[in-house]
Image (cartoon, rainbow over all chains, first blue to last red; front, side, top):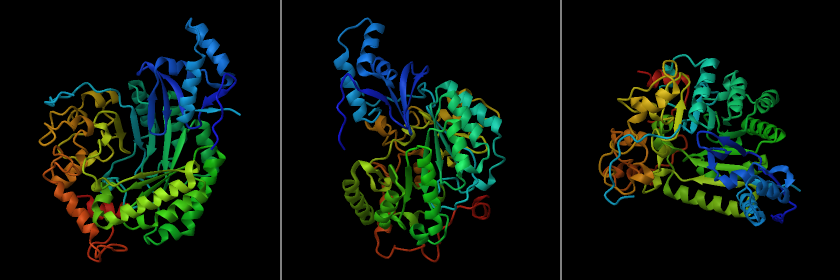
Length: 94
Length: 385
């Protein structure tokens, strides 16, 4: 299988069969899938909840930099999304 | 972890993350490897829809996130759709565990609309002729129809096949069939010996040779098909030397509600003697989970005996499975005899040795001890005392 190249123009969405939600009992975003749950750390949760299949990774990065008054997050976002695609939590839209 | 393995009585547990709702014991199938209690026919009336909705709300409020809808055959309940709808609205990840019998286009459309997240289709067979297991046109047609429906409504096609002595030699044909059905995931799960399966253990336990051959076939198949179909192979724990961390420890994350409302820390736990299992008709989920004696009994490790009590591995495997310890040794607080440190480990190895004997190769079991199929009648006549 050829892996899509992931860059700032990519758009990502939560993979079919997974559900991302805020879980008050865990005080965290969690990713639910058949018979399992991944508790996400703050940055992973903040990135994933913006992966709506519409926003590009550049737009998501800009939004995160605004929301958290941070800079130069692009590499972190791409690194996380690449890992999440590899784990099939996210898929890249064509 | 400290080297001296300190003993911890009843630590405050986290929430019951995983709720298994056994909606009914009714089932159109009669699988000899069913884990349901053999005396299920004594079960009193099933919970009403309203009871289930209350159970869902209370469990979700405590932090439950995974919901398994099982049975029996959950499609036998005609209120499955409103139960799924409520679960979805509450934020559960909903997983229907079904044989597919009773899954029509209309029902699946309604379940999809209700928010059903996932379907696990078990490949089982109701017929008494094991040859039919693979050749039965009726069964294959049913599974094909259901598989097509699952794809039509955009679910991943997840197939679960229970393996045992009588079908494990056909792993290749089973996998070919799964591929033809368009499965995305196949779980080849060796039988776990509880309930009906335990009663039929001598007929169902494969030989070591059978397990090894099946695993080799599965490996080759896996290399051939790659990502197209993911294959999981669950080795029977009788062939292991360390026990599984069953339920992550009883009362740790897992809560089962049986058709009559009995709350259990594991779906097989009803057999454990000396425990008063609470019922959702008379107690709330919070009280059941945090306060009931039955759920606290096996929390922590103060209940453990040697060799578990002083074993550094107790924090990894929690002494294994309480039900297996009880079934094989008569005491649920003993180490799971799958562990080769257990003084009862020979009970497991002897069962495997019996299965390894060339004479122990029955098609349908020896004449004097036939396979007993799960049915209301067998339950009533053989097991309800």
